[in-house]
Image (cartoon, rainbow, N blue to C red; front, side):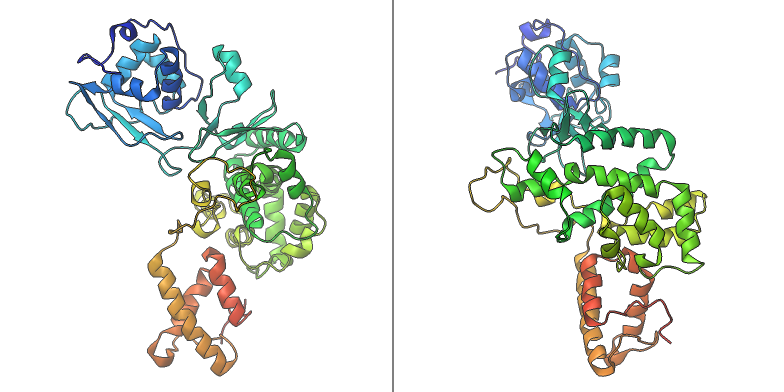
Length: 447
């Protein structure tokens, strides 16, 4: 479409398509896509008209199916005129409507800035298609910002799945009533516990770490849930990556309810008897409660030997802070360290849409950069690990005196630093040290 210098063609300027209302919590770009459809335009044509400055498109960034847009005040005024909705109404409905005043390439006038990615755009998902149709009278997809407890439409039984590079995927939950029940428990937990949101973040890291490990042969619920929700044309391997948060959601809520309980925080402290734990097996009551709520009696045995991971880090912090309620102690208790956070789906999935089940390998891509990891730190660890291997071959252990510096390398200080921050270490580093000497981080002094 070629827009005149005014930026909007006359038919559009008069609001000829009628009033187009936003959905509560909708992404601004999703709303603009629905607005463009009412004018029988493509989204690119509408953006060109809205950001037109003297025949030039004052728009930065690249348009993708999962993009969001920030608009400055003149551009927002044009949109309000097109949809015939007051700006204050749009601001209440669209969370990103007035979040930023972007700068354009061509000076003053309307400006738009496109952005994407899990770091730049808050968590979102597709709007429930049935709810959208009832609200707008049209069966057109939309995207909304979604909190973790808003991923389920209980009325129409959909999981509203975020998929990078797409507009999201509504997944029917007719065969998984436990996911719907978990969402109701999630809302009740948020109402009753002030730490519910933080507990959910820790619990999501816990179930995410279990998800990434090889599943025990006793595990039955997750494979059945995967198969029940997998679209007919989706490759099983790809779906296992994409559906992580959906499949683990009931278990995440079960773990979060335990972690948020002051009773269980105090039980963990009491069982520690004043000593920082070395393994989760020192807290049998906690493991038994998790096994009961997760409906997995065998999980107690699997967790008992854990000396690392988000659940161990939470228990360690719980004992260290003695269950105190001060802000500093609570911050330490609910902190999820970078190596324990679930990997973003954009790091794990291909940039294309869902691959079909064609018998080929799932469309996963190699990740060049591990988010939250420093290349320099990895090189430093590898260097220290080499010296640790040599020391172990010579002495048969890694109880290195802190001041020791064999071959001029400060191995004692390196080892002491790792022992101090062992709860924050990446899993692969812990595994590498444990392969050399299982007691590298023994609870007693190296002396």
